Amino acid sequence: MSAVGTVRRVEQVMGLPVSVDLRDELIGEQAVQRVFDWLHEVDARFSPFRLDSEVSLFSRGELAESELSTDLRYVLQVCVDYQQRTGGAFRAWLPGRALDPCAVVKGWAVQRAAGLLRRAGARNFCLNAGGDVVTHGEPGPGRRWRVGIRHPDEADQLCGVLEVGSAAVATSAAYERGAHIVDGRTGLPPRHALLSVTVLAADLTIADTTATAAFALGEDGIAWAAAEPGCSVFAVRADRSVFSSPGLPLV
Amino acid sequence: MRRVIPVLLLTVAGLIPLWRFEATPHESTAVLADPAPAETGSAAPSTSGAPPAGGGQPASTSTTGSSESTNYGSVQVQVTFTGDRITEVRALRAPTSTRTQGALPQLRQSALSAQSADIDTVSGATQTSQAYAKSLQAAIDAKGR
Image 1 (cartoon, each protein chain N blue to C red):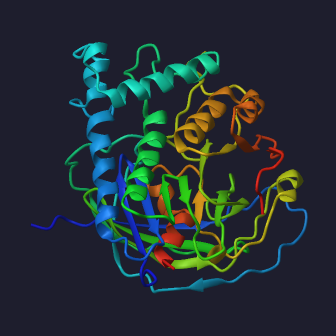
Image 2: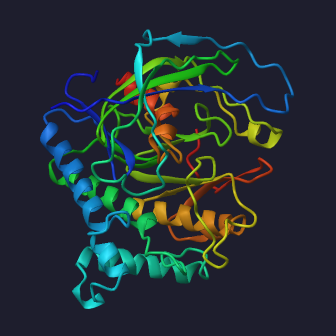
């Protein structure tokens, strides 16, 4: 049930519920279809859960580094970069495990999807992939996108609302079973784990990777992420105390 | 050949916090639709990444999630999958307000009361179908605009 001239679509892709909310008139389903086609392509190429993906082939040593696609090389470079910046807390290569660059792939793929929409002429849209968000333009004339931050204790409550224009917002949290972010330094869950950490940045590759890395660092991750260039942070610690960066556009 | 369409029907009842510092105002829940009898697939939460390609048929049993009323309001969303595709998201019940209630005062200081209609999207880790179906984002998607 979309308003006239808008497109809304939700699909499960890359193991994530991906919602597209396109507010431009005259930008049709085709542009949205390209977004999902691209994300399906990313899944086929980079999922560590598919034996024939480029990531799996490289992980098993069946592809040499020199044979990798430019895209995967870029993703792995981001992984290495954040591993260094976090002193090894963020790690795509864990001992005894297959290579898992998912934390970077998701943000990068969705940011690229936003680029596809922009090239198709879209100016006002919002992408949400498993709770990580890219906004562009405005939701309506003179309005800013209102991005709620999920309350860590209640799935249907918010603990904050950010008002943004073109931006990226990503959240890492422990409240979802099956989300296993480990501290790469120990291979275990973070020692002083945060309940949730939300990062606002200009680009979802940065926002998503920074949020994941901050979560892996635990409480130390708050100050680390807040000091990352172009990043603002909203974090809830285990004792329910809240940190928010100065200048965070909280409503 | 249409495959069986599993429907995930989940209810969020606000967890009753251990700490209550003050009575919260009663909040009503708008019933947007009647729950249809649903085939419920046993959607195993997957970790991030792809579900196995061409996964087996989920066991189907017919259930309707009960929507419990708490003073936070409640959400009940019906998500229909056809294979990997989410073909429909329908809000059966959505909170009329999303008053935030932290279990401890610090979080409550950042609490807000907002109509979910005022929110365009929600950031939060909802990387599995089940987490999504329980999320405010699903309610927003279901309502459209």
